[in-house]
Length: 513
Ligand code: KIV
Ligand code: ZN
Image (cartoon, rainbow, N blue to C red; front, side, top):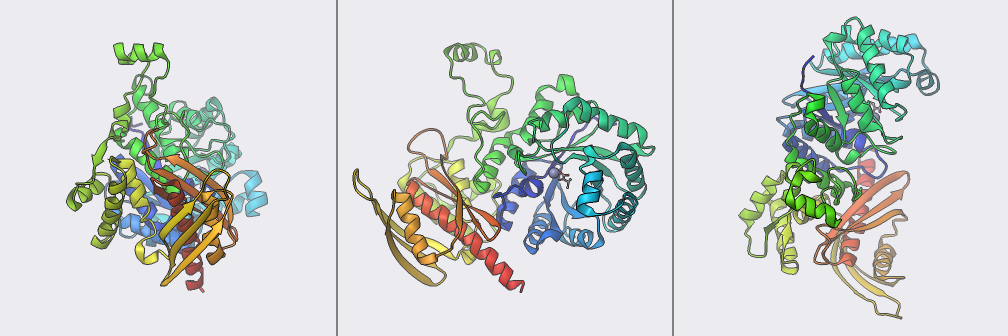
């Protein structure tokens, strides 16, 4: 048993399955680059067979990432596995992660398959995958609620077929730490060839125990891979949070006795990037990455920390990347400095035209905001997430009037492809008036399911407002994010960005026939 704990990040796959967290190829690529800077061992980049968009995202990440293994999920069938292998072709290191459900409930009600059929399919899938890739992970979906005898039979067979990692998901977040740890320990004891594979934990957070369960799987069960997500993003209540697992193992090395290869100073930038991209706000009291995680409000605590930091702090803020919150650029900064900062932040731009467009936005922002922070740059580049050539809707100008006792009124000019629209409307407030003006021309018919406004940097009113809109149309949910010192402008940008995502999805559907 090695004393290295493998960190497998699935923000771009399981995290993205969270309703409203879907990301564009460019957004996924940007996050994958940050995950590489964080030095995660494995990046699960997506589910290549699930859509052409996901296939392209996995392929782009496989192309770009050199230091982490890039993985694609695949159901246990030849078509899915071939698509995964195809998307991963150019990766420096690749992994295929194939899965099939093994609990009675899932086999009978969802798959409508017998135990023997599932057993055969799991074996054949791993055999097929192993011929395409040397690194194969197998997951028995709903593994924790599966019959241990049947599970042992399946796991032994897939190891014999060449699976190199066995992942035991608590798919519905039903486990409690001690029982989950014992479950994995017994599986490892009972499966005769268990030492031929690395065991992995994958816990959902429905009862708030995903991190505790994962760590019990490691300590009691002997697992040496944890599957986790930045900010604990994921379906329903989310997945195990990467930052919490990593900092627990780091901070309590005396207890865990394990090494992780993570560059922890990249944790907060990764958290911000995921939050800004998906619009999933991090709660202020969230461990490690919440705005209050290192804030000491009470006088007694402040006094203690000033005298000796470790009176109330078990981790150093700068060790997880909080120190990155500094002024980096201003109005006088040139294009080269801006480009270098993008590189330092791990933001790769595909063309000089993209750098130029982002730099123009930076200059515009610097004219209106004296201090530009890293978070401002990440948000500004986020505005580029729909690359100019794919950006159908674009804000050109906005003016609005609101005064006490009067009905707010907005005038908006925006581009829709080659057309320029001018629209105006009253509304309950300036944001409502702006959106009504845009909708009077676009007539998207989308339902608004979320509107949120946050300050990008510290609590000052100088900060940019970051707005997220979540729109739903025909079963598709998209997030649009926009940032600007003026929150009405930020709202218009966010709304148009969400419309762009709906528009490009419609285009893709049309193109696929
Ligand atoms: O939760 C789960 O069971 C999964 C598997 C596909 C690994 O995400
Ligand atoms: Zn999962």
